[in-house]
Image 1 (cartoon, rainbow, N blue to C red):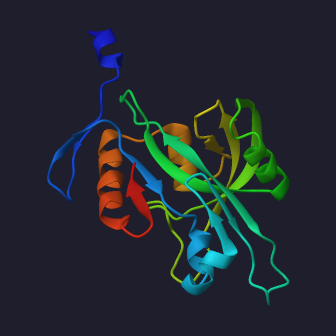
Image 2 (image 1 turned 120 degrees about the vertical axis):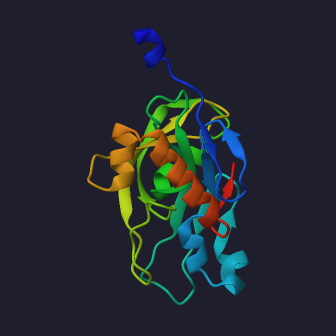
Length: 194
């Protein structure tokens, strides 16, 4: 009996958007770093270099005070208590120019021995506590680059923000369902299901 209770199960939940039952832990990805939307649409082709895994944003010609922003796409996992797989987010995290260049140069190789520091702009359904018009909350994290063909993973530094707490302690099935349903209804412009 005790072993049966400890056994982890496949996560299932009912989506409020489509009304269907989904099996497997929720997984969502943010298509663009939040900084992408800070660049006027007419300037994006000249100032942004983007692909599914990398993004570099250069300041406008008349902005001499800003440095380029370098981002890589990473996986942020949140354990679901009792589930066999975590809730996953595909998110963007900043990198220094040096780490970004090193990451891109070694992208096609095994990078599992590499890690770097980055700032995660929190712009996720349920976790974004920033008021409209204010700068986004940024959380510190350690990026583990991973083996060839795998996206890096981020482990947030210990702090009181709910996203960092949930990554450390895990979330209940009820909470995972609530977050997934909120994400399903809010992610149209910023994220896409993976």
